[in-house]
Image (cartoon, rainbow over the protein chains, first blue to last red):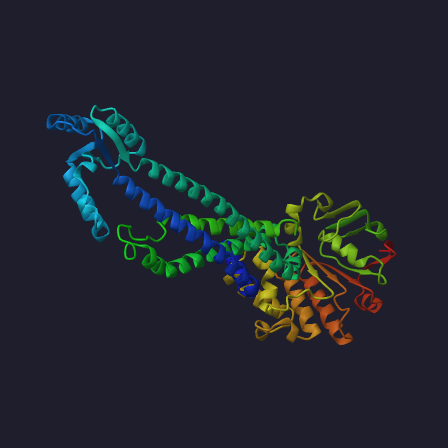
Length: 289
Length: 219
């Protein structure tokens, strides 16, 4: 019996090519915009994960510390949980590093006194250390005698994490809207086709077709439209991805990771969303008919 | 086989189609339902497949009280009753093969089993294999009616019901179609034909249930 439903659905799909094409393009466009957003969020998340791995804590030291005190501070910092290495940077090294980093922009800064550059300990962290652990470690280092100030990218990372949470929340909202849009389009397209096929439906009922026999092809048709719409959006995105990657990825901006295409779970979710919303749309189109 | 017991049907707007109708049709019988236009013939036939529902009374088909049949069982009742409509009710964008195949498709037949049966029934109604791929609009009225009869007979229903099957046909074709019903009857099918043409009743000498203004006046 399943074969007949598929044959019927395919025949309806071919015969209702006009309304289906319109519905398909609208769904594909909606899914394309959503998947584009999803791809940006995924890449932003990857970028954050990469930055989080590179977080360093810089402990600026009080002026006038003896060599023994610095050595002790370094030893105590190394003993802290989560610390992989500690590097002492003298005022002279700090000045040299700044001049090197700033390049041509640093013209005129060579004359600045070394005393203006405080000595510091550059604390490198173990991989996979969470932001909360970094915050706790920074607090402990701040309390060490001889440490003037502790700096790390914590606040910035916190803001970025808040933004990521917001973006992820937006995905759910947009996903919900997308589901409703697809439902609405599929239900209306199929309702239109249902009314066009009313004579056939009436005859089918008179010759003994069950409601399932009449409705299942519409469900399959709806699912097919949703799936094809979502699939088409993925194809469009795949075609666009190299251009976005060129404009935003590591090729365009150094230090940025390469701009990745949608992950397999995201692709699967997109296609499932298309299939499911089309299926529900198909079911809605038959209700009350 | 078929029993109507005090059946009444009034359409919205107060038009009474049937009033207190009772009759019995035995298994294997050939019965005409006669009466002028508006007598209630079509309503009476539609009640047999629950295309309409009675307001009062009971209808038994093969021992089953169909007035109490849940909607989910109605399709199975309709598979037992082959129905021939006056306006043929053929799908214009489907071939003869596809039209005749509809009752088999809904009953879950495989395409292989369908093809053999369809060729067999089309031959029975006098249409050769060349008609299989034709579309209804290209056929004459008589040919379309034969296709409709083939569709009604395709799954061997024990009952065949025809509503004014010759209403749109010329006298020569009318006889050909009626002969077909008689042939089907001889094969053991219970046949009920609604017609306003009294000459047909006289010619075929079958029992007739006469309706006037929704009431049985004879039969």
